[in-house]
Image (cartoon, rainbow, N blue to C red; front, side):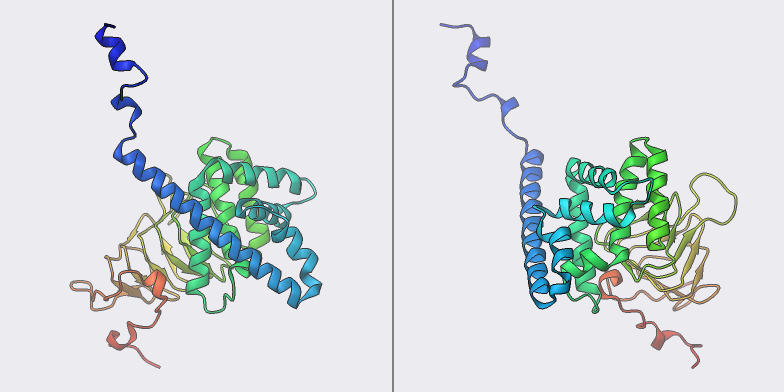
Length: 308
């Protein structure tokens, strides 16, 4: 009879070490579901592109080179961003391989891209298809480029991250520091003039309109930029300065200037911003995720000094 040690590790015996844990099994299921979702979305994007090529032959070559000739969403967006952001000294082929290597090495980036595409399609009534978002929505494209520059930043490839950040700012008029941390399901609607500082943090399912600034208050160093919770809605032209917290599900009205924390599911409007319902007992709206509903005006009936 073989020793006990050999019995424990013989091919016919089951070792606990070879059995996946519950967390590993759950991770595998999640990864498979994410792969299936991405594949399904990519199939739809290609179908939309084929339809557009048939309807508008002038775009057929463009649609073939950016979408139809590619085998995956990652390859298509890498090619498109490479061509959008290249310059005479930053070649499109270099950028293509940089984007593709980054997207394929980290599945979470692809998953975030899928969530961002769905966010634009569902929340923006002007978005007529996923393929049009992929090709033409500069807020979406700026976010995807930022995800790559942020990855480079975390890998201590800061000069390249900053070079990419500079090209995004030049081409898309969107200025997001590579160190800023941004969740998934993000909509930058119109996007022009958006500024997001180095230590800013943005949660999941957030919608931000054009000319929004998430900035610092001066020359202070360290953690100095806003923290935006999940599901927030930030209106056009809003300015949020300093290391302040905008609670999950909060709204910041268009043109507001916010310098202090905004509670969860509260609404801040005005310059300087005031909380709807008052500072002591601010009104909490019923929406859990204004970033998805895109309701910018629900507060008006409770804004007692609203004048037109």
